[in-house]
Image (cartoon, rainbow, N blue to C red; front, side, top):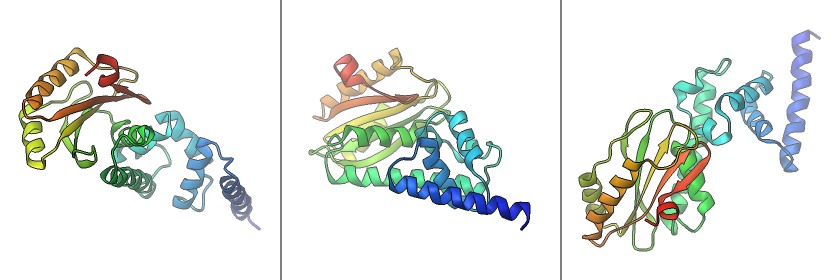
Length: 227
């Protein structure tokens, strides 16, 4: 038996142990990622790649939210594996979005937080989303309002108002990310949110909240500034 065959046999046993630990709910974070990567790269020890992804991106949400271009910069990670990771992220986002269309998006704050983190949490530029909600605060539409640069993104009150009226929304939630970790709302964020709130109030449409994802934290303007 060649050295390569011996290595594959040893790693096959390691993967079987990973699967058993998963069944026993005993896997650590990077081991869960390692197990997933083993299905994308079946004939290679993916432990170093799993640890490298954690080292480079910091946490699972940032790995899942990372653009394909950023994933492809990781040594040893090819296009098939990058697509595999993004497919998992997309499936998770669609799962949360489907749930939020069936019941109020605030039924599970954890689900809403995870949705926001995976959707835009690891992106290198600011991205503004507006969630349009019905009278039961169920999701009508998650609209990508704008994509900007590393420290700004445009906000267009007229466009938000137009879509809210078109969808007959009763409330909205604004969400954007700060690529710099652990930075809360800027003065500009507060000013534009107040401006949009005043416009929508005249139309009997509520801004329920404005969230910022920064690092692994979800900041709420409603909680911080009594929106």
